[in-house]
Amino acid sequence: MTDKRMNDELAEIRKKKEQELVKSIDMPRDIIHLRNLQALKNTIEQFPDNLIVIDCSAVWCGPCKWYTPIFEQIQKDFQHHFVFAKVDVDEARDIAIQYGIQAVPTTLFLKNGKIVGNLPGAIPYEKLKELMIKFKEV
Image (tube, rainbow, N blue to C red):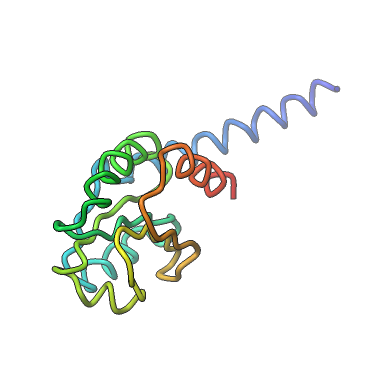
């Protein structure tokens, strides 16, 4: 490998890392609680190029209570890459209707307001982590 080619590759890697760093600075550090469809639309507008991962749940739901710490851990692990939100489907019925939530918990993956993934049920940490890694690579 020539010195010029290696320097070009290093410059490209630096540029990519700088872009990732700038992007991560703007990311929310906590899970956003969405109380209605307008709040979701505002979040989509605020983070147009980011994947938004939403835990749709209900306070009375047993599996939701089991899944909450898993979702919270995933958020901590991937907070620099994705936007994480939580929706109580009883409180934000307009979101549940808009995105066809029929079971809780359901994890939605939105990009520019469109569903790019939908996982009904409480899924284990490792399965969710594998999926997040795949989304990160895209």
